[in-house]
Length: 521
Image (cartoon, rainbow, N blue to C red; front, side, top):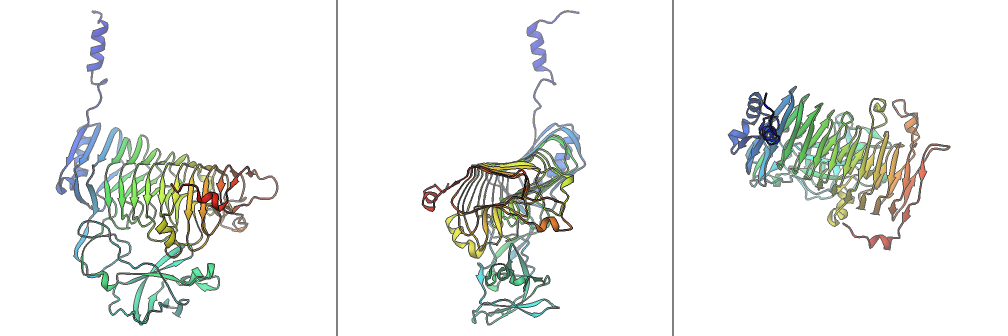
């Protein structure tokens, strides 16, 4: 056999199929029909043996159905699938459209105007003139007095009232509004402390109830698109080399399901990059039991509840360099970014005007921490309220929160080098809040300034957690460290007695004048 020359051997290697890069197989989506057939096109490409598949969605508005792209139980470890758009590629949840008459209104639905922009169908938050009166405990009938005797609404069909209650809020159907008195039905009526839950703000901090109204008659009579579809992408029990969403704008859905859900996927990597999320009613991106998922360089605004979530079954999640502004508008005790599980990294994000909380980590003490590891880093994030949101926060926010919020259980979580500033709300709205006797936290080199009504950093002892028969955490307030932080207000760092592994290092306290000189951004 003749011996090949070095040049010939090199050419053979370069030109061989194994050495050559896999040429991407493109699926061009240019109209609604091709968009509707996207899942069929992807499956056909894989059936044909394509390894690198790019779905290019051209600029335009496309309407996705519920479960538009569902991939379940697919074992494709050699396949790289990218679904991407460009500026002007907008994906909207399908639904009903036309002149809105108020019928069938739901606070779980995003409504869009004729320009496909989200619209608010509610009033600003207002304050009652006295405590809510329970008229009929069995039926849950309650009366809220607005004090405005000119306020009468003849048609209360599908009108709702939302009432903040301590650290969450509830929405109730309105029976009637006459001479400023709102009769509504609270199906969850219960006693908290000395007051009914509808007066929980008063029970917590002696504040009269706040409320806002949805779907009043003056909000009707214009063309609207009511988004009924909830989920765009579901990937469950699959194995890919990689799967990514890039450059897409999602605008409006309903709260029935998560918009993008990765569920117990293995091997490879999963990513959502450079996407926009507007008016999403439940989680925009949710990872359950999936490793190596990345959410990076995205923007979100006007989303109702949590935006990016990775659960306790997930591992090595990265939430990086995203910008979030004006989310958490449903006024529930949700944070914008929540990571649990092993090896997460929340870094370089900017979170403004965030509702209840911006970033959350850890597991509740009643869950089963022995089954999971909770480890990760929260670093280099900036969290704040803009001047307008800061001014409105006492009326528009919830109580007993933290810009960064941690639950009780962690194995090893570090919160470092974050800049948290200009935080406000109705009551007890902290900078960093380590709740319910949190354990194994390192709080290092954070800058926490201009927190209006509570602690800059609060790690409190809650002995009742250990006494709770449902608690899975036998010893709270252990393994915590507080060092190198810069604050301009009070800090609470409570430890157990005796040797508990807690350490307080050198932290810097600025005067209010010094803190005011620190740039906002």
